[in-house]
Image (cartoon, rainbow, N blue to C red):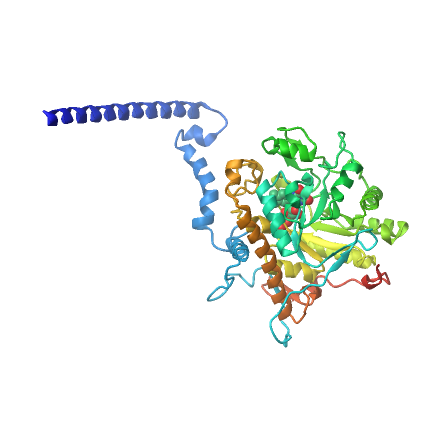
Amino acid sequence: MESTGFAHWLVVLVETFALLFVLLLVVVVLVVAVVWVLDRNQTHNSVLRNYPVIGHFRYWFLHLGEFFRQYLYSSDREELPFNRAQRMWVYRAAKNSENTNSFGSTRDLRGEGVPFFVNAAFPSLGDHHVDPKPVRIGPYAREPYDHAAFFNISAMSFGALSAPAVRALSIGAKKAGIWMDTGEGGLAPYHLEGGCDIVFEIGTAKYGVRTPDGKLDDQKLLAICAHKQVKMVSIKLGQGAKPGMGGLLPAAKVTPEIAEIRGIPVGKDSQSPNRHLDIGNVSQLMDSINHIRDITGKPTGFKAVFGDMGWINELCEEIYKRGIESAPDFIIVDGSEGGTGAAPQTLMEGVGLPLHEALPGLVDTLTTQGLRDRIKVICSGKCITAYDVAWALSMGADFVNSARGFMLALGCIQSLQCSRNTCPTGITTQNPRLQRGLVVTDKSERVAHYAKNVMHEVGIIAHSCGVDDPRELDRTHCRIVGDDGISVPLISLFPYPKAPEGQKASELP
Ligand SMILES: Cc1cc2nc3c(=O)[nH]c(=O)nc-3n(C[C@H](O)[C@H](O)[C@H](O)COP(=O)(O)O)c2cc1C
């Protein structure tokens, strides 16, 4: 009796599954038929019109290829903006794991534009140690800033970045003794959390320090600069990835907290103007710098992407008219290869000078004008490994900033979706579910290790070149490979211009 009952239920189960399967099949056939008819008759896509239904595979594969290439198909030195070898170098530096390779380098040492360094015949005896001397920024400001670390965190706003990312950067920066630039999104409590030095950036929308009609609110700026951690103020004129265009924070990222900090409405796209309303020429730029420095007492400078250096010559003339103390205390030169939360591809790829031209252009213009010691040069643009940083110092930078290097240290996997609020590593998303992946205690350690290891390895290069302080690297220490695979000294590509008799760094207050 029992076995007959069991057989009955088994038959019912099989019949139910068979029925469900047939129903599913009918639904699938119906859906395919509808898609086929729609594809065949639509007028905007020729592939789908000719190959209805299966044509969709092309788009899925194109999308998936973006992710699979990096794991399965691309070689170590192939991808952009950062290839696997570069990313792995940063990951290892951030994890403080052994950064040595076996058998030999996969870097093509004959590739056009590759920099390498000139070792001294008799380097000084013993291991190197990195102990850079502090550099004074803003000698005429009421609160000059003395800072030693030559590798620091570039501007990235709270909004473009998540709160855990900003917190991890702030804590890591404090541990490594480096500064962190707030980016254009105002000052969040997360920037202050770790106790690191802060560069406060004023973007074109003046987020965080704006009046309702977008002008500078002095009282708000004073409140921000009252924090002892805020060491300098940077006016953002432009950014390498989008010269001549303001930033866009998509509505999905404008949470109530971000809106409050920036002084904008919640949940609406926030587009900043393409330039400051009150800075339309060199004289107005000087007015703003001097106004901000006067009221805050902090060293003040600006960040720009350069098309040419003509206007820097004009700026220098204006400085001489007003007096040397009126000069910007620093200029941040951002190469056109710079990163961003969101920008049109055309601007990213086609406008502005890349760092390898803009940096020597700026350094040499300031030298020719006798203002090189007065105005400190900070640079950014794909300087994420020790050689990139050593190259920039050799070229004449006083400090090197990195944004994406620190994003990689935070765990970024270069999935190229910073603007979509879907960042899989929780770095550039305001979605709490995705932010959960970023554990602040762990990632802040990585930020600190990364910064320290970059500086340590630049120290190794400097020691090998026979100088004690990485800032003593100059254009004789670096060679660049030309299109024939043969390298030439940096100094023959960019000879030092003659400096007029001007104020020397040692004579500045
Ligand atoms: C996610 C993200 C957000 C950024 N936000 C800002 C910003 O608010 N202000 C700014 O001046 N630059 C911003 N930048 C540009 C960086 O500060 C930096 O100038 C540029 O990415 C070059 O450095 P890198 O090559 O090391 O990334 C941002 C870059 C990224 C990747």
